[in-house]
Image (tube, rainbow over all chains, first blue to last red):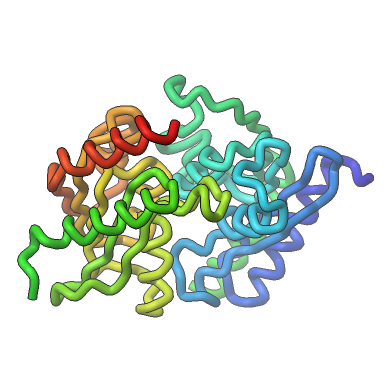
Length: 150
Length: 150
């Protein structure tokens, strides 16, 4: 059993894997209710030439396949960056239990920024949201990436 | 070359295919700028036991694979029902040119209902939206389905 805080370190390791492939460094992992990591993924937009291949979408797709479940209501997602509207709505659709994210994304985020998807009372979502884990590490990775490659 | 209006008929045919598999009858197709249908899909949530396997998501995934493109900015999507927030945000993410949908979904829709995703001026989306095509046919299919199976 790893301590909770270590999950974000695993997500950051995924982000670093992405960076090595010239991907925007974002990583995500899915953890079951017993604390086991069941899936890991990083951004693969460049590699797959697919604008939808964000870390969160990919890790959720893996988790759905691995579990054979329609919903992931007993699972948590850890992601290094605040999810965009696409990933936020996939999190909603799959009924993930808890979202832990690292750095806020004031421009592209859809949780505490933008449409603030889960703040809409009409959605009746039970998602628990926690943020700020290793935010400065995530920011450093992104800054270095954009400085070096774009 | 088929007349534009016929594309929704093709999408409805997909919805009917879904119904035969005990799926909520929703169908979608992708059309290129020359009017060629490049991908078709229907809802496969039950078949795949995956809450994200909506017709629009599946048809977009097919189109991305077929074209090898990161974005679908030269393509249009025709779908029998107003897209949900997940599918709406995938349409946004892939920069689809035009969305044609059939029946409004007052409860689950995210285009002209709910969050009205593309009405947010901050998104600067160029998506053109047209609706109402064969709406009554789509409604009949859905009503029959829910009457018979749920």
